Length: 193
Image (tube, rainbow, N blue to C red; front, side):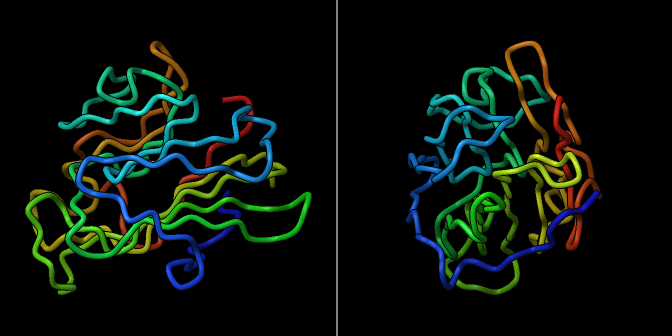
């Protein structure tokens, strides 16, 4: 079930100002019952490490993947070689205890080699992590724009999308699959994955 739709935070969230292929550690202000850590590693390339590992390499691979935070626990809403030439990556907490949502948004990020002009060849998507599961949903991926104006990359064609629990367990939505996601898609992660 879709719990929330897209919640725009680019005007109110904290900007991470990530460079190409870089990461930042952010602190989630609550412990989720499904994910025990509050220090998350956010990658410019469309992933979040949930266990402190800091390397998300390209090219993307099917899950579980060594290139994805050394096969550590991770959210991979759109693992691809994203650039920093436009937009930014933001994070914010919305709501009140015990029903807060931690949101990470990749806003207007182009694929590697993108130009420095906001001209429609950028993607925008989010991860929502819930303090208290809502309808058994502990997290969700929400997509506002996955059209990079490149048929070889649009809508998941060049990305891996899923949740990696460990070196041997993962829930993969898609890997380099055209049409896997589009504007308005919401993927929900259910408790007890």
